[in-house]
Every structure is written in structure tokens, then in C-alpha cells.
Amino acid sequence: MSPTSTRRTFLKQTALAGAALYLAGQSSRARARSANDKLNIAVIGVSGRGEGNWHGVRGENIVALCDVDENLAAKARQAFPEAKFLTDFRRVFDLPNIDAVVISTPDHTHAPATVMALRAGKHVYCEKPLTHNIRETRLVSELAKKTGLATQMGTQIHAESNYRRVVELIKTNAIGPVREVHTWVGSVWAGKSRPPDTPPVPAGLNWDLWLGPAPERPYHPEYHPAKWRGWWDFGGGALADMACHHIDLPFWALDLRCPRTIEAEGPEPHPECAPDRLTVRWTFDARGQQPPVALTWYSGERARPPLVREGKIPGEWGGGNIFVGEKGMLVADYGKHILLPEEKFAGFKPPEMFISDSIGHHNEWIEACKTGGPTTCNFDYAGALTECVLLGNVAFRSRAKLEWDPLNLRVTNVPEANALLRREYRKGWEV
Image (cartoon, rainbow, N blue to C red):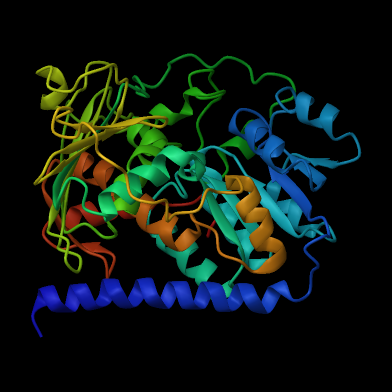
């Protein structure tokens, strides 16, 4: 059997096996709960995206709140005065009667909290990206398959109508076979040299718990709150922040999964900090009747695909996707899309809707917890998406075009790049 055939067989089998295990496990667990019962939910990380997420599930019983920063947690504690409050998420799983957890911590603690939850038999909703590094991504997605618990990654736009209409257009061949996609955002999350000063830790913040599995370093407001995304120890820059939202669309529409090659361009890599601009190019093999495709990412204040820079895309687009097909182009952002050239598609009649509107991204997960039904961004799908995204940072930091072996979870042509697929954990935070 050729390497290409082996690879295709692996991708197909893992997708089918993941779906079967996931749905089978869900069904077996669903029998114990009535759809009318409310879930007992613990929320880990309750400010920022955490606030958006507890609003999304507040119709259930919020029985526990966890955050390392008591100041930022004040609003959630006021909203749920009866909920138990903790600062260490490792203690959440000692509480009785927790059915499910919502995790909205910084990236570097996603996997430790998620792994503990799944091993404790709790359904999990986790913000994007699913994990901080690729070894964690595979661990979490495989554990989710094994347990059969209801999982959902927080790519909320996936549930909106616009993405569904775009997927229908691509899958019904409105622009013909697609061989290239360009995705761009203006976001910048870049660190600087490590701050030399060591201001005191603010009252109410447990800095040791905030660091979690990351190497020890003094507190500084350059890390918390919010700015942590620019530092490799805690986040992955604009790519890790936004690509799971935007690349979700071509992943879904084109049935993408594991890339064959990954290369990246940007400034000289910094050992501690994410770049202020980045271009990443992934290539994917043919999938069934769909041809090979190249997906290119552009991030930074002035980052734009050539078609946008050259004025070939009409309208205002702060970011989005350009699908380039044999019969035309489709441009989409979160809320709108157009077919190009406009004169060619004048009077175009879109296909009959065949992807049902969502009951809501959080509601999908809640329903799955109760009934065993599927979620659209379960950790099998979300794991593959996150793995692909994070490989872009590995390629950038390696300064090489990488050849990826998903079966063995390794870079085959640049051995030193494999060290970037995982991290060392502080004692007590291992996964």
C-alpha cells in the first residue's frame, strides 16, 4: 500500500471510529437523565469569555464557580450567590453532584482542567483553542472518544446561520472545486521582552494557581489580565486566538482534517513571545472527490491576502475567508458572504437549506449532556481543527516547512520541531 493510501485510510478510519465511539458513549450515558432535568454545572474561569459562557448556560444549575482572581470573579459570584466558590480548579472535582464543567481559563490550563473533568466523568465545554499544545490536543480528543461524554469547543460562530449557508454553497459546488482558501484577521497578540520589574501581586489574585503548569515567573500586568495570549508559555498569539473561529469555516465546508505540510513566515521567532504578524500555509490531500487544497492564513494589523490588497474583493472586510473555486469565488466573514464575480452570479439561486439552524452553541452541548445527541464542535472535530492551527506556530518557531505524520503525531523531516509539540509541566499539574 502506498504512503498516500495509508494516510487516507488512517484519516478516514479515525474520523469514523471517533464518531462511532462518541455517539455510542453518549447514548449509553443519556439514559440516566431526563431531558427536563437541569444540569449541575461548574464554571472554571468566570470573567472575559468565561462571563459569556456562563451567560450561555445560566438556565441550568450553576453550582460552582472557580477563578484564581477574586476581583474579576465578583460579577459571577453576585450572579450566582448560592454557588460554591473556589480558586483551584483541581478541587472542583471533589465536589459532589457536578454533571458538567465549562472551562474558560487561559490556554495553558485548558488541558489540565479538561483532562481532570473527563477522567472524573464530567461533560465538558471548553473555550478555543482546545489546548495549549499538540500533544495535549490528541490526548484530550482521544480521552473524549473513550469516555463518550458530551463535549463542545467554544467556536460559537459555528452555530450561526451565515456559516451554515456558506457550507451549503461550497458543498453544492456553487463555485466549483476549491483548491485554495485565504483566511485573514487583523488581530495582534504579541509579547515583548520579559519585563524586568516585579510589581507586587494584586490582592485577590493567586499567582501560583494562575501559572498552573507553566514555568514559574514573577507576576506582571503584561501577562494578566488578557495579555497572556502574546506569550508562548500561556498562549499562541493571534493564530491560537482567532484561527479556530475563522478556519472552522473551510474545515467544515471542505472536510479538512490533517494537513500534509505546514510552513510559516513572519519576523525572527522570539523564544518567549508570539509574533506581531504571521503567514501560515497548510496543504491538504484530496478528500474523496474534492481536490487537494492549500489554506493560507494572514494575521497582523496590515495582513491581507493578495486579492484584498489588490482591491479585487469588493466591500469592507475586516477579516474572513476567500474560497477560490474553478467557477468563481466565495468571500465570507462571521455575518455575511458574497459570490464573485458579482455579475456572473447575478440572479443566482442558493440551494435549498439542508443544514438545520442551530438551537444555539451552548444549547447544543446542554442538550447533548442530557440526551446523548451529537454536538457540532465535539472534541473529535475540534481536536483536529486545533491540531492543525497549532501546527502553524510549530512551523513558524521551527523556521522550516514541516511534513506532518498524524498517525504517529510527529514531524518527519525536521526532528527538532517535535520538541514544540509538547511541554514540561510543573509538579502537580501534569496531564
